[in-house]
Length: 71
Length: 442
Image 1 (spheres, each protein chain N blue to C red):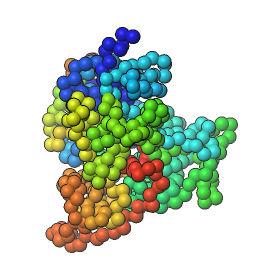
Image 2 (image 1 turned 180 degrees about the horizontal axis):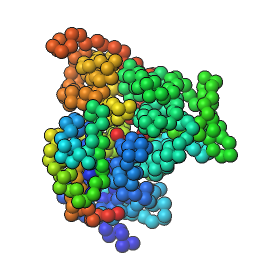
Image 3 (image 1 turned 180 degrees about the vertical axis):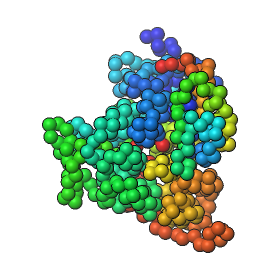
């Protein structure tokens, strides 16, 4: 699956890092490092991370779009 | 030609602005034919990680594809360069000889890395960073452990690259024509904090120096000649000298375009050479140069991630609206960068600022918030690892709040106002400005 984090919006609250620690990691004081292509089986945890974000910075490709609209 | 019957909206540019613009058209209720043309063979991908995690080897370049947020039902023409535009017949021509008619055109072709044009440009071992292929090639070269990396240019991309190279343990030299890194973006006062980080990380920073020539042996770069008469032995050169826009197909069609961008009106409609908007051609993202009301209608291009999305969405709204119902695009630039373990974020445009005040933290701690002022107004703020303070300054910039900010906060005795240390402006074509002088995304 494909995700992207708006790092202008991200404030480093690190809630995603608690919700899905294998895919979101804070480096230094507030640099967010994340996996933009986590496995589809992790979708539920990634969606929890999205819901946990206080500033709603995480965008996730809907599952029903994943195999659609391919160039 | 059967295509003529189905002329719809054509988006030229298959990156962030093109994708989000196309999605905004569908979100806005457009159900007609939609074509997306991209000159790279890849679906839209995210550029910010390229000069950071991809170079570091933490992410594969192919993993940066952007999520689709809306069903597009688009025809994709990837790996196709647009070479011609006929504004009367409303048709674009592709490099393969095919033609695509359009009702409306959204130009979102971005920017391209400025190439090395002095001596040695033909040598192997000389890289730029802009595209996914650029990043993959440079990553591969870094992984083969060069003896010394030379980075030309101390903008955001040059500094991020230096940070990655030092993390990889590679001997690294950065040559910058300015007195400090990030001088054009943030001024030398703040830039010197990064110079300190470079010193600590063992990066050899050469201030106020130019590379005059690259020299090779057997077709591969081996040495750089500097303006101070010295030479650097190097087998890998990264050229990080900012971006240009390939707009020849637009200017040949009579639009006001050059290597600095495509000039638009406030509604993101492209202007022709007479200065009149073409009602069917819009632009968004790095390529668009438009009068930004936040900065006194100064013509600006903004080469940042957030602008690519916002401007594309705005242009899409105007494309779908009547010519008598066009909204002006106002945008407060913002970007982020991570380097040397520090998260740098800005809001506003510090360009031309005359003064800076450290309102939180201190330069010496490398954790601070600096506010920039011009003619008594607040114009920008930059955070080093203090991102949560930043949003409160966006509003102050929008309303042109007084600078220096009112002192007397209980956690800070006194706010010092200092010279931000911006270099003299470059000679620019026309009265334009580029918020981002180096390359790529962020």
